[in-house]
Each structure stands twice: as structure tokens, then as C-alpha cells.
Image (cartoon, rainbow, N blue to C red):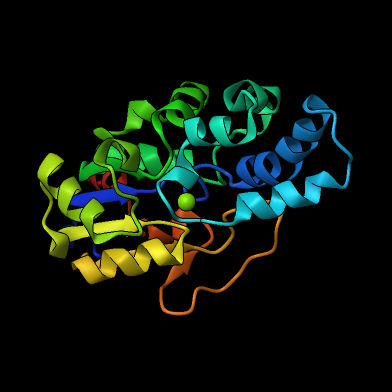
Length: 226
Ligand SMILES: [Mg+2]
């Protein structure tokens, strides 16, 4: 599926790709609306308004900013996230894949729309950083991955050859944006949220388990054969 000899750089999305999107879905659509009405002593029906508000503006830089939501909703988003942080976890065989990447040594870069406050919460809880050569947030760059400006800025920070780069991301708008920029190898995720059914991505290949991307014979086996 992937010719690893043709890849120098692997750009990895975080939420829904390496990490189970269930935490985010649950937090933004269940926990936050519920705690919001509790903290502001509002009618329970207000939860629906908050959900609709949260779903609006998806894909904008503000939408990914915890500080923005703290201002908009008047609640401590990080503190509320900590209330359900036990749901933050790696997706299926993401850890095995990261371990394999580390010994196969392409450059491995986390390219995420999560802001620094999200990263400060999730990286220590998941141990991801040990497997990453760099972490780049769209908040640092000032443009989300959905925009071309993200990729050109990323290339200045982390030089990569688009023809020899693989991006794995569960967001088809992001994959489309990366394709437009010229990133040649693109892969989606069939089931970003472990609690929701698989879906098909229309114009991209997608995987369920990362094991499907690995060569049949691992380099360590080759070594043992002499
Ligand atoms: Mg994602």
C-alpha cells in the first residue's frame, strides 16, 4: 500500500488519527454542553443551542482554540477537559505504528490543528512525544491545515519534499488541502472515533489499522535472517 522507500517525511494528524476521536466527540458534544448549562444555571434545553454553536465555524483557527471557547462560553475549557481526560487515548495500533516509524526513521512530524493548550493536556497523557521528531500546531503558524498558508509555513519550519511526503489525517478537507499543495501520499482513517461506525472517504484511500501500511517483512526480521 505504501512504498516506504519513496517516503522521507511522515506528517501525522493527532485527533482522530493517532488518538481516538471519542474523547473530542464526547467532550465537545456531550460533556461541555452539559457542564455549561450546569455552571451557568441554565435550562437543560440550552445544551442543544450550545451544540449547534460548537458545530458552527468548524475548520477555522478560532474553532481549534481553547482560549476562544473560554471567552465565548465563559467556562474553563481545560479544567472541564480534565474532568473526562481518562477518555484520551491512542487509536487501535497507533503505538505499534509509531514504534515501527521510529526504527524505519523517516522524519515524523505531528501536524495538528490542536492548539498548545490541547497539546499540553494530551501529549503527557499519551506519551506521543517520544516518537515524534517535531510537533507543529496550526496555532503556532496562524492558519489551520484546511488553508494553503499552513503547508507553506510548515515547509519553512520543517523542510519537506511534497513528492516524498506521506500525510495521514482523518479530515478529508485537510487531505484535500494537502493534495492541492502537492503532497503526494495521502491517507485517511476509516474509524477516527472508536464509538462510531466506519465511514468511507470519497477521494482518498483510508485505513482501519496502521498495520496494513507496514511492509510484510519488517527490517528487524530481515536483520535476523542475516
Ligand atoms: Mg484529526
